[in-house]
Image (cartoon, rainbow, N blue to C red; front, side):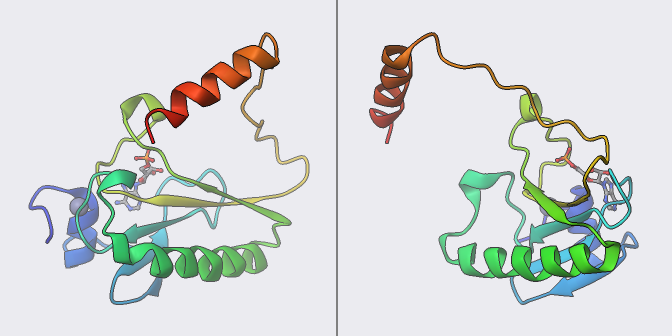
Length: 138
Ligand code: AMP
Ligand code: ZN
Protein backbone atom coordinates (compact mmCIF):
# COMPACT_ATOMS: atom_id res chain seq x y z
CA UNK A 1 0.00 0.00 0.00
CA UNK A 2 1.50 3.33 -1.08
CA UNK A 3 0.81 6.80 0.31
CA UNK A 4 -0.45 9.55 -2.00
CA UNK A 5 1.79 12.30 -0.64
CA UNK A 6 4.88 10.37 0.45
CA UNK A 7 8.08 11.30 -1.39
CA UNK A 8 9.42 7.75 -1.51
CA UNK A 9 6.04 6.34 -2.57
CA UNK A 10 6.19 8.82 -5.46
CA UNK A 11 9.59 7.36 -6.36
CA UNK A 12 8.10 3.84 -6.13
CA UNK A 13 5.28 4.90 -8.47
CA UNK A 14 7.77 6.50 -10.87
CA UNK A 15 6.29 9.97 -10.39
CA UNK A 16 9.65 11.33 -9.24
CA UNK A 17 12.86 10.32 -11.01
CA UNK A 18 15.45 8.34 -9.09
CA UNK A 19 18.77 6.63 -9.78
CA UNK A 20 17.79 3.06 -8.99
CA UNK A 21 20.40 0.40 -8.26
CA UNK A 22 18.63 -2.70 -6.89
CA UNK A 23 15.12 -4.08 -6.66
CA UNK A 24 13.27 -7.11 -5.32
CA UNK A 25 9.50 -7.62 -5.06
CA UNK A 26 9.66 -6.11 -1.55
CA UNK A 27 12.58 -3.66 -1.62
CA UNK A 28 14.01 -0.82 -3.74
CA UNK A 29 17.43 0.84 -3.53
CA UNK A 30 18.35 4.14 -5.15
CA UNK A 31 20.88 6.92 -4.69
CA UNK A 32 20.30 9.62 -2.09
CA UNK A 33 19.78 12.93 -3.90
CA UNK A 34 21.94 14.82 -1.38
CA UNK A 35 24.65 12.32 -0.48
CA UNK A 36 27.07 12.54 2.40
CA UNK A 37 29.48 11.23 -0.22
CA UNK A 38 28.74 10.15 -3.81
CA UNK A 39 27.38 6.60 -3.76
CA UNK A 40 25.31 7.18 -0.59
CA UNK A 41 22.26 4.99 -1.23
CA UNK A 42 18.87 4.40 0.33
CA UNK A 43 17.18 1.01 0.77
CA UNK A 44 13.42 1.17 1.29
CA UNK A 45 10.53 -1.27 1.65
CA UNK A 46 8.03 -1.06 -1.19
CA UNK A 47 5.21 -0.90 1.36
CA UNK A 48 4.57 2.53 2.84
CA UNK A 49 5.46 2.24 6.52
CA UNK A 50 6.75 5.09 8.64
CA UNK A 51 9.58 3.52 10.56
CA UNK A 52 11.32 0.46 11.95
CA UNK A 53 8.42 -0.72 14.06
CA UNK A 54 5.87 -0.84 11.24
CA UNK A 55 8.06 -2.92 8.90
CA UNK A 56 6.25 -6.09 7.80
CA UNK A 57 7.61 -9.08 9.74
CA UNK A 58 8.41 -11.02 6.57
CA UNK A 59 10.56 -8.30 4.99
CA UNK A 60 13.60 -8.78 7.23
CA UNK A 61 15.38 -11.24 4.96
CA UNK A 62 14.91 -9.13 1.83
CA UNK A 63 16.08 -6.01 3.64
CA UNK A 64 19.23 -7.57 5.02
CA UNK A 65 20.04 -9.13 1.64
CA UNK A 66 19.51 -5.75 -0.02
CA UNK A 67 21.77 -4.04 2.50
CA UNK A 68 24.47 -6.65 1.89
CA UNK A 69 24.19 -6.54 -1.90
CA UNK A 70 23.93 -2.76 -2.14
CA UNK A 71 26.53 -2.20 0.58
CA UNK A 72 29.08 -4.35 -1.22
CA UNK A 73 28.37 -2.76 -4.61
CA UNK A 74 28.55 0.77 -3.19
CA UNK A 75 31.81 -0.08 -1.45
CA UNK A 76 33.37 -1.51 -4.61
CA UNK A 77 32.05 1.22 -6.91
CA UNK A 78 33.33 4.05 -4.73
CA UNK A 79 36.56 2.48 -3.55
CA UNK A 80 35.34 2.81 0.03
CA UNK A 81 36.95 0.70 2.72
CA UNK A 82 33.92 0.77 5.03
CA UNK A 83 30.17 1.29 4.96
CA UNK A 84 27.77 2.72 7.53
CA UNK A 85 24.20 1.42 7.52
CA UNK A 86 22.02 3.93 9.34
CA UNK A 87 18.29 4.16 9.97
CA UNK A 88 16.78 7.34 11.41
CA UNK A 89 13.52 6.74 13.29
CA UNK A 90 11.66 9.81 14.51
CA UNK A 91 12.28 13.51 14.03
CA UNK A 92 14.65 13.69 16.99
CA UNK A 93 16.76 11.00 15.32
CA UNK A 94 16.94 13.02 12.12
CA UNK A 95 14.16 11.32 10.15
CA UNK A 96 12.85 13.71 7.51
CA UNK A 97 11.05 11.31 5.17
CA UNK A 98 8.36 9.31 6.95
CA UNK A 99 8.79 6.19 4.81
CA UNK A 100 11.14 3.73 6.50
CA UNK A 101 14.59 3.68 4.91
CA UNK A 102 18.17 2.63 5.52
CA UNK A 103 21.10 4.83 4.53
CA UNK A 104 24.09 3.01 3.01
CA UNK A 105 27.06 5.36 3.32
CA UNK A 106 30.47 4.64 1.82
CA UNK A 107 33.35 5.45 4.16
CA UNK A 108 37.10 5.91 3.85
CA UNK A 109 39.87 6.51 6.36
CA UNK A 110 40.18 10.21 7.11
CA UNK A 111 37.00 11.15 5.22
CA UNK A 112 36.17 13.67 7.91
CA UNK A 113 32.90 12.13 9.10
CA UNK A 114 33.12 11.97 12.88
CA UNK A 115 31.55 9.12 14.85
CA UNK A 116 28.98 10.25 17.37
CA UNK A 117 30.49 11.05 20.75
CA UNK A 118 30.25 8.49 23.55
CA UNK A 119 30.43 8.99 27.29
CA UNK A 120 30.66 6.17 29.82
CA UNK A 121 28.01 5.46 32.49
CA UNK A 122 28.77 6.88 35.92
CA UNK A 123 29.45 3.33 37.11
CA UNK A 124 28.53 -0.30 36.42
CA UNK A 125 25.43 -0.02 38.63
CA UNK A 126 24.05 2.77 36.46
CA UNK A 127 24.57 0.65 33.35
CA UNK A 128 22.95 -2.37 35.02
CA UNK A 129 19.93 -0.24 36.04
CA UNK A 130 19.55 0.98 32.47
CA UNK A 131 19.66 -2.57 31.14
CA UNK A 132 17.06 -3.65 33.72
CA UNK A 133 14.77 -0.74 32.79
CA UNK A 134 15.00 -1.66 29.13
CA UNK A 135 14.45 -5.39 29.85
CA UNK A 136 11.17 -4.57 31.60
CA UNK A 137 9.93 -3.12 28.27
CA UNK A 138 10.72 -6.24 26.28
P1 AMP B 1 16.18 10.93 6.64
O1 AMP B 1 16.72 12.22 7.20
O2 AMP B 1 16.78 9.73 7.30
O3 AMP B 1 14.67 10.91 6.60
O4 AMP B 1 16.71 10.85 5.15
C1 AMP B 1 15.97 11.23 4.04
C2 AMP B 1 16.94 11.23 2.88
O5 AMP B 1 16.19 11.30 1.69
C3 AMP B 1 17.90 12.43 2.88
O6 AMP B 1 19.25 11.96 2.97
C4 AMP B 1 17.61 13.11 1.54
O7 AMP B 1 18.77 13.61 0.92
C5 AMP B 1 16.98 11.99 0.74
N1 AMP B 1 16.09 12.44 -0.32
C6 AMP B 1 15.16 13.42 -0.27
N2 AMP B 1 14.52 13.53 -1.45
C7 AMP B 1 15.06 12.59 -2.26
C8 AMP B 1 14.85 12.20 -3.62
N3 AMP B 1 13.92 12.79 -4.40
N4 AMP B 1 15.59 11.20 -4.14
C9 AMP B 1 16.53 10.60 -3.39
N5 AMP B 1 16.79 10.91 -2.10
C10 AMP B 1 16.07 11.90 -1.55
ZN1 ZN C 1 5.81 6.06 1.37
